[in-house]
Structure formats: structure tokens, C-alpha cells
Length: 254
Image 1 (cartoon, rainbow, N blue to C red):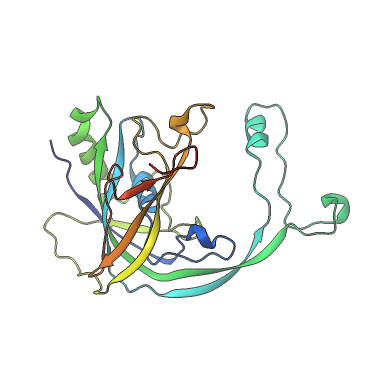
Image 2 (image 1 turned 90 degrees about the horizontal axis):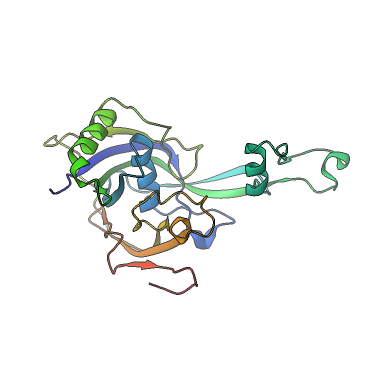
């Protein structure tokens, strides 16, 4: 049984799909990464033990337009160890200070900084993805697809989808089969290497579960691919394709 194509029109005011080589001063790719698109589909319907989403292509309906945004951000990250201990009731949570006195911070240095983001504005894409059931759940494919289409048609989601950053919400509409749709904005662009995902999507389990210590199946796994926009369309190769460069645990390439 072949999976069906599921298309979504997605739009929003701002987006930032950060290029990893430009992390301090964020600079967005002109189109969403496959992992960002997977996150949008997961926000609508996700049963990670049964299936995963395979992004197939992105149609750019509005030409990419950049805008410079300067935002106040904190310098520190939340401690995973402290969060786990707090969840287990062993210790209170440690706050991340954006501002405060020397007595509170223990230093005259502030915990906040200003960073510039080169974001996208006036976003409009058409996304395409298919369901990839894990082994043992192939018979569930029609039910999974029907459930997704019902949820998407009614605008239901588990959490608000977003474009790269949670402060950039994404809105979506299911594209019905056979419906008249706008054509992509005609342009060609060689993006170069683009981030594909940060998890190993080949394992038949929840690829986002990193809680299992020592289980490489739940570990981070960076993958990249050569992204080319032709005629306003970015074709995304399957994760298992040779076109996807996978960085192994030891730092080599698969």
C-alpha cells in the first residue's frame, strides 16, 4: 500500500530557519528545513511509536524576503540535569537571570544580550509529506492518514506549529486533492548544504526520545543534504537516500 501525499499551505508573519554555520547572529535559510517541516506535521498529528513523517517537497509561493530583527536574549541555557532533578522532586528549579543585582547574580555581568536575526517575513509555502509507518504498523496506514486529514481540515493541532522559533507561529490549511492551487514563485537558487535533521529517523521507535542514556538510537544524529530550488520548488530526498549525508557518532560520515 503506497502512502498518499499530504499537502499543507502554511503561512505566517515571520520565520527563522537558522543556518547552523551562522548561529550567533542568526541568519535564516530561504526555505524551511525538513526538520522544521516535520515539526509542523508532528504538531498536527504525531504517534512516534507508529510512524514518522517523510517530507517530499516544498513549494515557495511568496518570494523570500528578509528582515533584520534585534531581540533581547538570555546568554545561558537551562540545565538539563537541574530540570530532571526538579521533575523528580529532588531540587528546586534554577532560574535563568536576564537581569538583577550583584547580590542576586553573583557578578556585575548581565545575563541578557542583544542579538540580530535575519529572519524571513510574509511567509507562504506549500508543504508536501507522506506517512512512513514503522515495521508492524503498515496496516495502520489508512487510519493514520485519515486521522491526520480530519485534524488538519478542522485546524486541530497538539500545539501551535511555528516557523523555526516559537515566537514565530505558523498557520496551516489542508490542501484538498484536486483543488485549484497557486503556482510556486518561479526562481532557481543553490542553497548549498542544508540541515536535514538532528535525529536519526531510520530507527523504528520515537526518534525524539533522547532520555535513554547509552541508547544510540535515541542520540542526536546530524544529517545534511544539497538543497537546490528549481522553479520555486525544493525537492527533499528520502532520509535513507544516498543524497543525505549522515554524521555518525564518531564524527565521521555515513
